[in-house]
Length: 168
Image 1 (cartoon, rainbow, N blue to C red):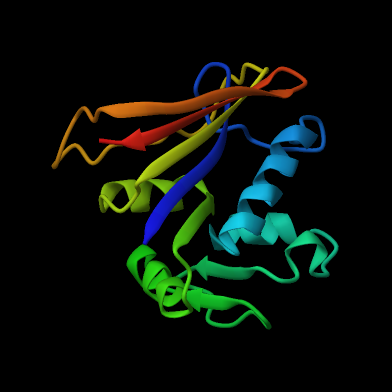
Image 2 (image 1 turned 60 degrees about the vertical axis):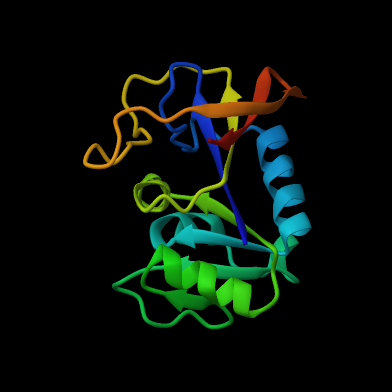
């Protein structure tokens, strides 16, 4: 199964922290929805999922398998809850998915990267600078540096640039 990590970063490399004062760019959200629809699924951390739920309802993800990775929450109606990244991948593979889209939460992204179970990275670079933020961290026990290969780059509009990498 191919696993793709999808994230929006600021121009200075931090995770873009959405807020009412700094909402996510529509182009990035539309791109995420398109990738989720293509994959038929996405994996997300609990806090990010709670932020996505907003006012409730299925919205654009009604026909998509959503997997929440959480050790504290055991049940969300209509959503598969697992305790680890590998369990999430195993669940989606068992349902016949060929690709898993890892959607969010810096902690979740770092857990997947730390376990070496990401094949591709999609970074949407938002045209903002942010003074504080979270970063992707490599597991320094296993490696300090990791080569990636640029597969594609494109403008999504409104100053958002997408970089798509394969992990070597």
